[in-house]
Length: 547
Image (tube, rainbow, N blue to C red; front, side, top):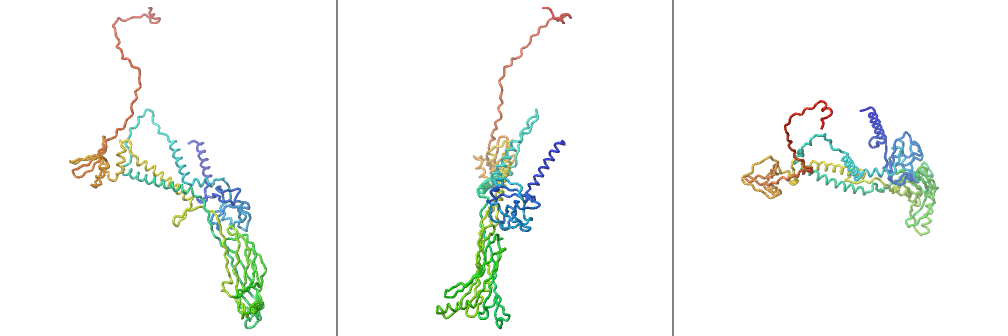
């Protein structure tokens, strides 16, 4: 190897290694991330089917297009950094009007956009399908077959005589069985791959996210100190006696959590109402309206138990009743909107706190859990994800299924080619197609022999199939003798021999071509006459003898 050739090979190897290092995917231990885009969130720069190539960076800044693994959506998301939230990033799609629900930190970012290839993802997905892979394999086979050259024969060398070659009968029989199975597997893989190609690569998935509001009621007031209220204070859970206390303050705190809510905007206030068993109801009043800040709000309303009891007495006096109890309810009124998983929602109002009211006291009418109501607002999120095929309890991505179908197809075609080559009829040994088909079909019962002694009684059957039926009936072997004049099959039964002889099919040889030629005249005998010797002088030798 010359020095210049070594330098070229070294440079090419370095270039290949650099390309491998640059493009080696993250899933195989490299640093390059390949993302096939879906949807419209990054339009107009990216469209469905584009391929984005990303690589890790030392630091990420506002304006960078990054890819990260979304915990909320359970998929890889490629959007742009629009702001910093401490050590985390605020992410948003270029075509979205809302922020991403996730706030990934730098160690959760897969990489920054390095290269965009329009429709590259669609081309990459097509290469994973069985059809293009089979086409590449067939094209490679045709190319290799076309570039193969016959071995050169030295000038003047004689061609080698054809020698019998081939595998044994049992091996060829098993190879033909394997070829049939491989052909069936190839047909199934091709059909399955065709079906997979018709299926979309993604599917729409509807998920329900829960936005939860954790509420907490409490109330407090002052009362006349005494046996009933030793400290003169009323706390949550105590009955409120109307003659000892004139007012209590009922507070409610609402905290929003779950599904990483964002963009929360809204207000909270408390309303009070009085309802009797006969269906009469009236509004007592409402508290101030407060705004939600950082996902929580607290507001208070003042309840006057004595005034409520007096209103209840006047109602029964007007209707002519003998008096009774009523229910005083403090109800939160929530008007709030936001996003969950990037989708807008409107929050529901929590359940109210009910008190029973009679002429003497106000008491919590419901269980203690009513002091801490929990309200869930379902948010339906529709998104796309890679399509998967469910096999039992295992979900196989459609991309993996396409690769598997292509691999099975290529492997089946390879096995079919090898098995067909092994199971081919032998050449150079005078093989006959009819004999070979019969031998392959009944290989389990045929015993090749170099010769055998027929019995005293020889019965010639009309065809090889009849002879095989005789062998099955007698449960014997089919003796096969290949001779120069043909093939003899026989079944021995004591002194009786059942025989079928298949003559050898003559192989026509090349017909010599003799070119026409001019007749060659027969040589004539020359007549010699003995004469006296002629002597020449020196002058005659130089200038010739005169005529």
